[in-house]
Amino acid sequence: MLMSWYTYVDGKQYWVVANGATMTAHTGSGTGIPADFDADDVILTEWGDLTFTLLDDYNAVVSWESILPGFPDAAMDVTRLTQLSGYACE
Image 1: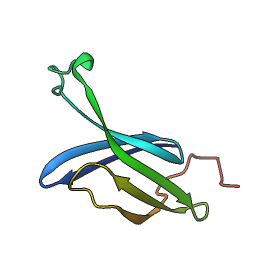
Image 2: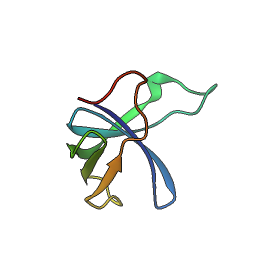
Image 3: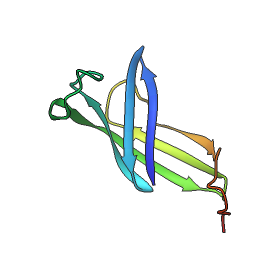
Image 4: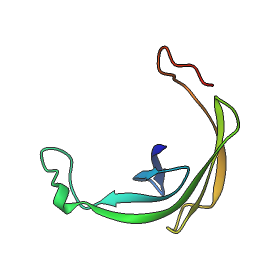
């Protein structure tokens, strides 16, 4: 499972990315947007842990424990919005 989450804390933008069902997430900084983007300048900082718990084919709970200030531990329900055409959940 690949997860990307765009959020804000204290008015500052954050991208949080992770991979897996229980995963360590990271946030990035250190570079600009195109044309000033330089992959060598990207700094990944560990953000904390995310856990996805599937409830059924369309619903899950994502919970997190962040090690960065400003992100309280919490959980929220999520619902699938899309599905690949021709592929049903089984």
